[in-house]
Each structure stands twice: as structure tokens, then as C-alpha cells.
Amino acid sequence: MKKFLLPVFLTASLLAACAPLPLSTSVTPPKTASGSRVQSSAPLAASGSLLEIGSGSAAITLLLFDNPSCAYCREFWEQDVPRLQADFITPGTLRLEVATLPMKKYPESEQEARALYCAAVQGKGAQMHGALFDLPQHTDAALLNAATALGLDVPTFRTCLTSPEASTSLHEQQALEKKWKITLAPTLILEGEKKVGLQSYADLRGWIEVKLEK
Image (cartoon, rainbow, N blue to C red):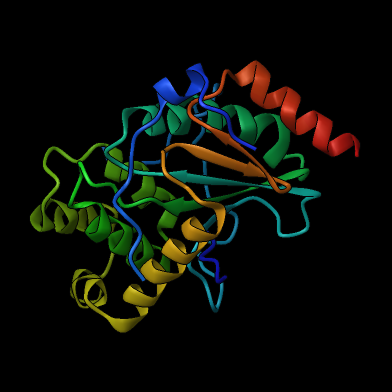
């Protein structure tokens, strides 16, 4: 599975989740408590399809499946990611990887996954991820406006949206979703263990600390 640098029971946590499509083959990242912006340490690897935030040498990796139209995903991105950044990512113990989950109720989400890839190609994956949550309308024109606001090369971005590389990135993420049997967003994978739905930060922090102790 390429990256762009950027045991589940039906419990109450499923109430804080959104459902995806059936699997087929202001414009800024969120602020931390100090007011600084969450940034991707390396926006794009040479062979990348997952947004990655944090050091490649981090002890453990948290994989997030989300969707830019999912309110619970936005809450995780705006409230929990800055805390993760401060507690684990900046100290170098955790890397966050993000896969976009296309969802039936949001048919535009496949194009948004392509947009995220194409922004990451230009080194603005984390910024585009944040921008997608703020789109006034989920249209191609809105994506191009976001690209302009982020200072991307818009003609290159527009061409990328329909490129084979963007399609490959989307299909690879869908393959990862199939591997983990992802059906709801947000879903978190930490060292082979899966949790579905928005978790309290206390529980999330404790989960990570247990994995770090092993």
C-alpha cells in the first residue's frame, strides 16, 4: 500500500459514525491548543497514496479512515488530531495515516479523495484535508477554488483529478478499506486493532499508551 505523506462490536460508538459507499476495485489545517497549525511532516512520498502526519520512524502508526462530509470525522480532525499532535506526533512516538472513505450518502467523496491526492502531490495534502471540511458546496468548482486558495498550480491540479495516478491512489485506498472491512467512518486502526466511531480522547490516549508499552 502506497502512502502520500501527508475487533469491532456494535456498541454505542457506532452512533458516532457514518456509512460508506460499497467498495469498488477558511482553507487551513486545524489549530492546536497553542494556535499553531497541524502540518504533515512530509507531504508526499515518491510512491504515496495515504496522507501521513508525523515521523516515519515513529514507534506506532494510527490509521484513520475518514470522509470530508462526515461531521464526526471533522470533529476528530479538529479536536483530536491537535491533541495527538501535541501528545504523541510531535514527540515522535506516533504517526497518523489518513485514508479517505467514499460514502454512499456523499457521492462527491470519490472526487474529494482525488483532490486530496492531487493537493498532496504539490505538498499541500494536510492543508487540503482541512479545506475539504470547509467547502461551502461539494462541487468541482469548489475544489478548484480551494486549490486556488491554497496556492496550488490549478491547471496541474485540474489535470491530476482525472489522471491514472489519482485513480490508482483511490483504488489502493479502497483495497485497504476492503482489507480491514471498513464500513463506517471514522474508523481507527492501531497496531492491528480496529475501533469504529468517534472515541473519547481519554480512551484514545489510553489505547495509544497501552500500545506504546508493548
